[in-house]
Length: 81
Image 1 (tube, one colour):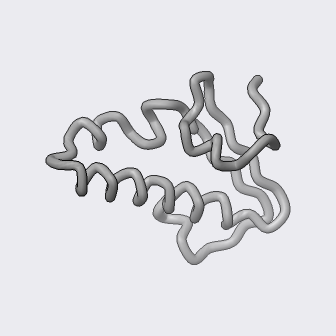
Image 2 (cartoon, one colour):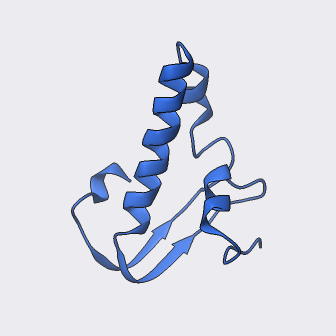
């Protein structure tokens, strides 16, 4: 996702928006304190935002249940398969 910054595409697919992947469990477990944990959450959220906003016309987000808590921020337009 970080490589997409500054780019734009007609269609974008962001895959594996699963709990434990976004944010990555290993990064969360390695947090030294609450401030670092907050920074990790915000960084991961911003990366998802950057990836999603690269799409000009079409955006596909995929994940398995349970999906990332970040997808709840997108509202009622998300669908579980």
